[in-house]
Amino acid sequence: MHTLNDLSRLDKPALYRELEQSLRSLLAGEPDLVACAANMASLLYWSLPDLNWAGFYLPDPVSGDLLVGPFQGKPACVRIPPGQGVCGTAAVRRETVVVANVHEFPGHIACDSASNAEVVVPVIRDDRLVGVLDLDSPVPGRFDADDARGLERLVAIFVAATAVTTCAGR
Image (tube, rainbow, N blue to C red; front, top):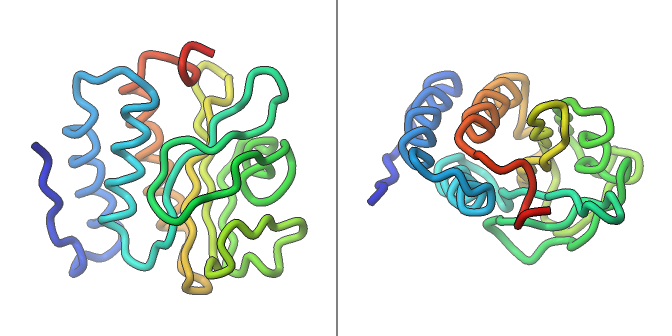
């Protein structure tokens, strides 16, 4: 059983170091992408302050759209075309996108009107897009370069832990 520690007093670098240890422990011995994504989304949602959504979008092998995957938060947009919104942009660029104010992001897709800031990290294995990790916050400017670096390290742990490259054998 995994227990969540109170990380609220830590600065961001220390917070992400703690999350790295927790994630390694949580994913140890489980190679399934969906199971690992579900636990990672939960860990982030319950450990990081000021989030209203944390989860994954996974590529549909037929359309190339991103489909909602394991997440924590309110119901989400189900399908995001490549290049659209912050998730689709991060997927196409294959780089982390940090948005201080989503209302100023061209083509932003508003799944939850309470979201004001967003960070999306592409999940890549062997040069293939496996999905994107998406975090939303009601607090404008919530995410910064420390979050981007910390989340990228967590995604690297996730990629190393998962043996499959796509969801449900796709």
